[in-house]
Length: 176
Image (cartoon, rainbow, N blue to C red; front, side):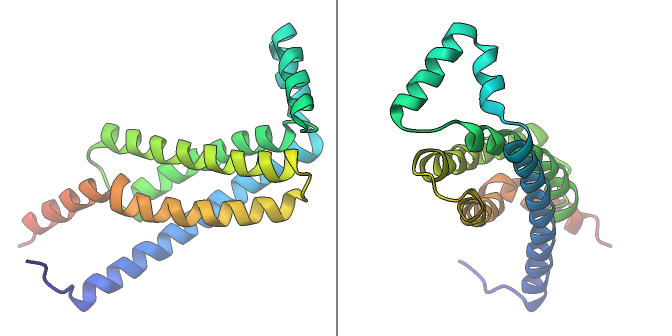
């Protein structure tokens, strides 16, 4: 039977959410800075197409025939989001959720969640910026806002949930 949470539990949850927001803000700054610099100063489409030789030229031709000007926003988002993922796992694991156990299981769930978020955000940028030609800043901000909310809730209930319960159990066992 579910028991109501004690007021201290709500305070701890609020503190954890606040930490998640701080980590999220740092992820936002890192991923946006990388995205902005790559999108505005280092067009990745040319590099991407060049890496694959003739296949790259065929991909570029397909993208243009599909109606998109480039993959610049999409590729910049992939690199920027990846930088944010690395920052996020380290700080959420050690500081927000303070979890020391089940590293491989957490990391697998964490990567799955973040790859899903990366695909969703990249698809959004491809559709709205690369394909439809909408301004990249509003699209990026709205996309990242939605992705951040999804990421928090799934991190809380899926990625770190089991390990967090184990940590609470271990800390209760160590109480005098």
